[in-house]
Image 1 (cartoon, rainbow over the protein chains, first blue to last red):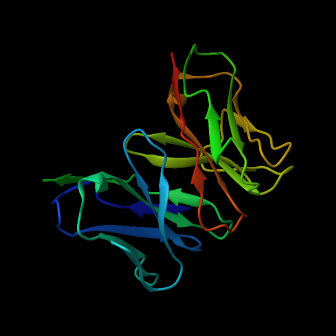
Image 2: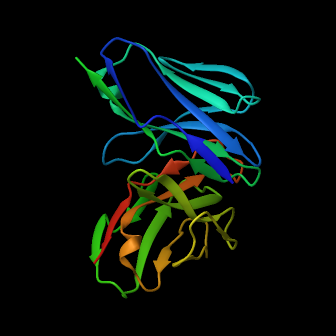
Image 3: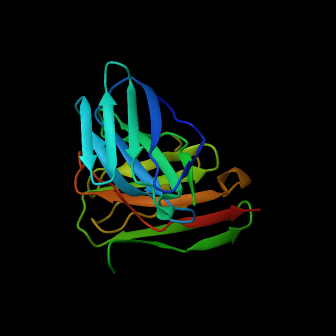
Length: 109
Length: 113
């Protein structure tokens, strides 16, 4: 099974940088995903890491260390529209996803 | 239809009643999934299907059943609803079982009284 931990809430100022950490314990690792979910909406895919290192996609970057069971999502140049929940998910060898409880990010002007 | 749709959008149901949540996708994705999302617990996998004709159990399958008669449809049935099944239900699909991105439907908000 999977045990995935991420902070419940974070607050940051518009234009700033926020880093959301995710730690996991898994019986079989086959990739780590980040999803964004605005209130009342469906989750949408942000990033995917299967090898160690940093994946950059515009203002968002995701990092993975498999040996440490650790990932982070970095949001740069924060905008008000980035206020949302960010879900860390681990995929197992059967290609099923297990999600953390999510981190609610609030961006303030 | 564009992407993945779910019906109904919301439903209030009496305990003990049978209910089927519908999910349809037009992306010809092989794999489909049902999740429930509860406050503080995140998304939990109920059942999944890697291809038409096959299904599998996820983390919380008890009280739910699914079928996958064709590629497009993946209905979730609650045979006899209980209040603990009050939740938001999301259907998702991906191009293949190892597909990278799962696309989520808009969700069904179910309340069991």
